[in-house]
Image 1 (tube, rainbow, N blue to C red):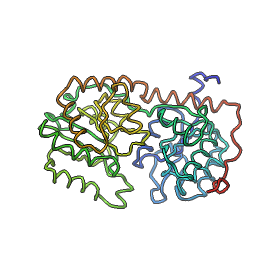
Image 2 (tube, rainbow, N blue to C red):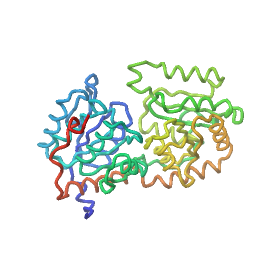
Image 3 (cartoon, rainbow, N blue to C red):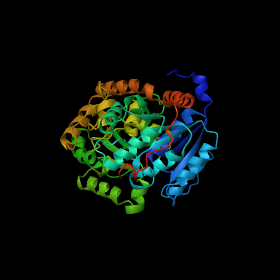
Image 4 (cartoon, helix red, strand yellow):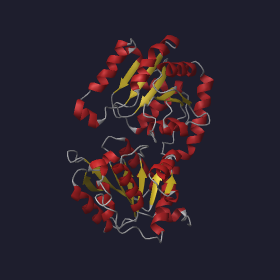
Length: 399
């Protein structure tokens, strides 16, 4: 199919359906960055009924996540709005209904060409999850995934035609490559060897393993400091308050490394995040879930040219191949500590890893990613192929 000229891509009007800032989640931030990179757009904000906003002016429609009627009502409004294409951000938990099945109500009522971006593709889905995702792919004119691993899963576990898929990297800020020593004073960590993790705080990210590695790291590198940057995930905060953060603090105290583990409890701006990334000597993602197919934090660290140490989850294996980072055995505190120490004591090795990651990430900066999406949106908007008139109902599919 002909790729439309870039100028024709720029005049399209796109509606993005997603969680959205000021809601604090990775997909909301992703959508804000992507929409800005694409150009002419408006936002349909998915939100719990208890979080009505306020939202910025580009939010033209709202869908209360658990109010089923809102989905069809908003789709019909988009049909009459004059938008050229609808960009659907998908992760099971941000859509209403069991396993987010209300997304199918939305696409069933939509008559505007739609593109789905999949933020989660489960390696072992339930039958319901498989049917919902396969139905969403069938109902949209194109589907975007962020890794070859995700594309392979869809063609295998979900029987999706590979010709229906586009692979577009997770976008990253266009940061300059800076020496950490020049930036550390800005975050009051001068004269420290800085290991960084960032993201909304919650279980399942392996912070416990990284803290457990710190006694061995400190014995070899006495000025080492592990920074955990990020506010507690809002859903966890509503359920449990700061109990999880306090448990991590207690672990650090019990191990005698309180002075070497720094919790920065805030949701930082994009500019502040860039500063923290540039100040770090090493970035670590010790995730225990080896099926994870995308990590915005790992992508951001590559974009900052960091030496990255990670467990070998699916996205890390793909992104850090070719000497772009170091992989360590999951659950092995010793392996993690040994690798951190090795790199902290070897500036040349850190610089080499960081340079390879940085060079690879140049195709991931937001202007490049925005251009890729514009071409996909233009292709879809100009396609003469008709969209499916209906989406099979979940009940009819056997749910």
